[in-house]
Image (cartoon, rainbow over all chains, first blue to last red; front, side, top):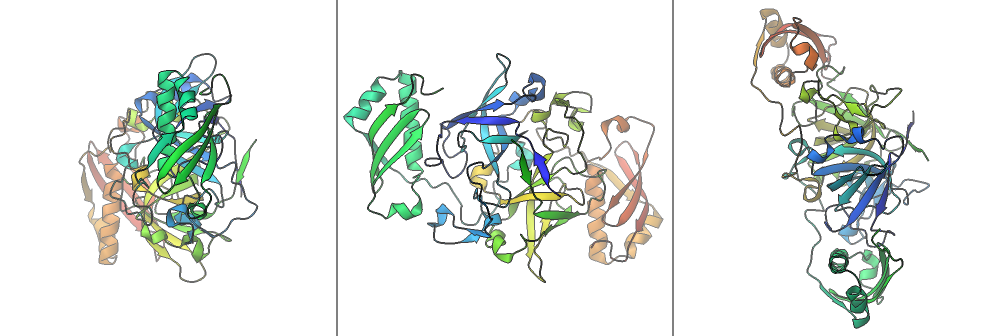
Length: 240
Length: 240
């Protein structure tokens, strides 16, 4: 008894690779994505009244995390990567059915042209993620602020210091003001959430690279002090 | 590009038919279900640390709502069944991928025997529902109490009057005390949520039947006054 689902949409995300994606949605409000609704679902009427909701549930496929075999336990990064918990007591992408679930901000519904596109904020999607369903967030049902949660009681937010080399600053200075501040804020948030896997936090390795939108970014880290050493836009319209 | 998922569990619910199921989870705390984890997923270690969470997300299949064709709009019962909204602006079971999503209370994890069973409260599952995934509810991410929601701003809770005929009271009196009060409360909650489809609320029809656990229940209604006229247990252990 298997169930077969078709993607109804495709994610175009600021996160072009796994490294840098926050552990959960809503941790980085500045992280944005476009959800392109695929035919035959790209009909305006299928989204009537959607904009009366501020938040949506996106059900998606962890398309880059498919594994041949499921494992009954995982090692959550929040526990330092050493302790094992049951896969069903985690949100790990490595699960029997690789189905993801994220609550995100609905920023805009774009019905221009022949398409339907949703602009989403606070995302934790990898670029290219297939979307299975979109549902409205209903606070009187979905919001359980006093729910008890085991090992993940709050966001992993420690203060960090962030600086840019003069070369990286020069690249920012060449961008339109709003783009520069948006990119600067996004980098800051991603680093605040420390994307390094636990086993690399204690290592001598201190140089990392990542891609956000169409920017290649290299940075160094010493304790909680991060420095962007290289910033390069890979296209003329790096935010598209 | 289709995706194929296997059920990891099966729901044994107090709701044996669609009629009577609340519109959302958590509306009826007394509504309980057992989630039987299916092999090969019924391994205790896959649920390690699960009981540190009070609430879970259950991703499931609307197995009794499969339709040949999807429709871009639906008529939510909350709007009286007359007004159409986009299917993606609704939680309707009739959607392109019939995937359901409910937040429920984790009441107990039963690892006795060779099985894994989860006792769940506040459910809105039909008996026999196939489960695709179990995830912990993480309040700092999932709880957005100030989210804006369109046509469903709060639970549909109007006061009702509930009475039982002497014959129905006699059946309750024959049950163990805790069972009788549990069944009485469940019936009250189901009727308070008024399970009648909108088009039947104005009709002359005022007699209805439903099944909760292994009880056959018949009731009459006049405005907000409900009367249980018939109560019959279909088995010796009607709550199993």
